Length: 414
Image 1 (cartoon, rainbow, N blue to C red):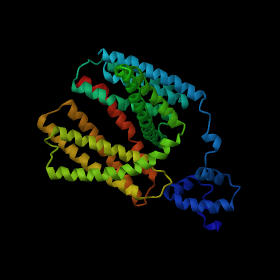
Image 2: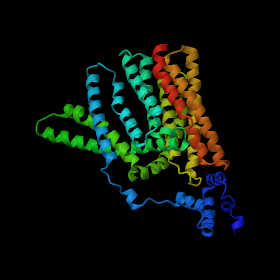
Image 3: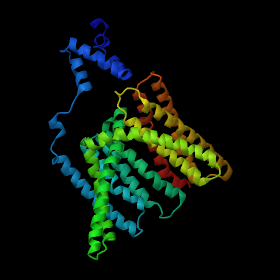
Image 4: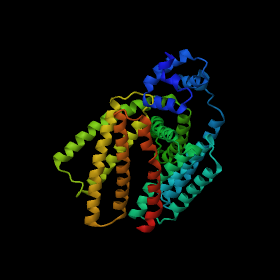
């Protein structure tokens, strides 16, 4: 039997073992059990056994909550709340732009990730410099509602999000697995934050109503001094909980991905049929073109979320065909949007809005082609899921570079 077991034949070839597992994970597991029975003393197989069948021990799952990480998170949460409240005061005074509120949250999340996974000093200095430059630059821009400045405000969070990703991945920022982990963390963070935010909203409603019965209207005070500080601090708490493998978000996220993907697909198909029925034209209707691009971004986000929540060991299933159809529809939508943008540029001239929308649509169009080709190969059993994940993760820096270009260059060019 040993002569026909591919795993036993390749014990000295780790690359081939990994390739076999990625190509046919279920078949690999079946062969592995046979190989493990015949060679229980093999160190190579012992490592693979832990990888395939590892289960967290009770002591791991129930690690003490109040430890050094918790105290550090608490300090960062308080600082985030206080800094956000101070920034909001200056926003109310119209001394700074509202976009500065992101600096009350995002840098503290980056600090927490650096604390959890310290990178080399070069990365720390680079991140610190880019955050400081961003703060300085945003507050050097005039407080006026020019299109180029508004675009800078809109793209800044994307650029900072990429910086936080570098803080999370640390020295391993080039690894696909680390970038996938960061994308997963984002999905789980949003789920957990939403759950806690709903509880906070209920508490806010109860508190204001109780004081209202006493003849006191505390809504404005409560919002600026409790809700605002709490919302900022809660973001740090949510990040802390997600990084500690809280089961709520991790258990819910895959189900949300599987439920939302078919719902979005059906909704999108109905919407496109209605568009054709009523005769809406993105080439002439600017607002409709903007909504078209909004739909594209939502579909891209849902698809990426679904891909990142897909386990590498899972077998091909109906969700993959739904994702493939979603990506195909997104590609059609983006192609129409690109044509409409090029038409408007040639007909009405160049504006910062049109250039920005054209740029992001070209980037998304190229990314969608890469993803759809990777998915097509996966569905034809020519490659593994990691190829699809590569098409998502390897493209992330390009979005970050474009966001940086629009944020820092557009106000000077336009």
